[in-house]
Picture 1 (cartoon, rainbow, N blue to C red):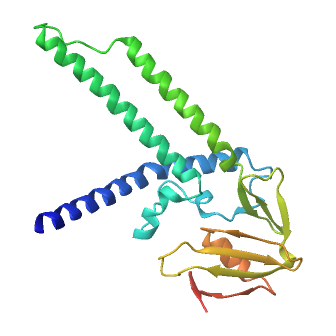
Picture 2: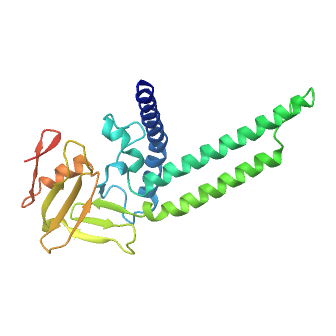
Picture 3: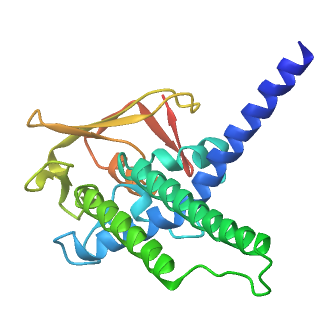
Length: 236
């Protein structure tokens, strides 16, 4: 019984450590891709808007400090986060396979009593680089629809473009009448923010930038189930 409990603890620790490593690896790629998308794929002049999504506003050193924040990184900007995780898994698998083949060649050379250690032929290195380039190209191709998605706030409007939208949608700030938070504020579930407008239209998002959200909540005529308490947002 004790051995079984120890095994469960070890397995849990391995899963947690693996997920934490995935978060560390995903963060710089996610931040870099989001900033690249902001600079190249948003058809609005820089400086005239703020991104509603917080991953487009943070820097490399703004790594989440909370447990929930860290372990949600591989799932951010669905499906971009999982795609980045998949790319890293593929890259590490290919690298380990390449290193294993090199060591196998070295052991084979030692059994043949060669004085000079066998090295991986240049063709094998070129093949590894070629396969990695193909995997990366496929990853970038799959990521383009995710990177074209954005939610930005200007002085007068909110522009939203979802994963499969051909054109952006425009929501005037003057008609924004509700912002509601749905989910567990204690972090035990995904929190979804619903934005409603006087026309009856609306959109939903996750992970909005808190500074931009506070600005929207301060607009006249906007009802919400959250209140601004200093630098934090709390449910009423």
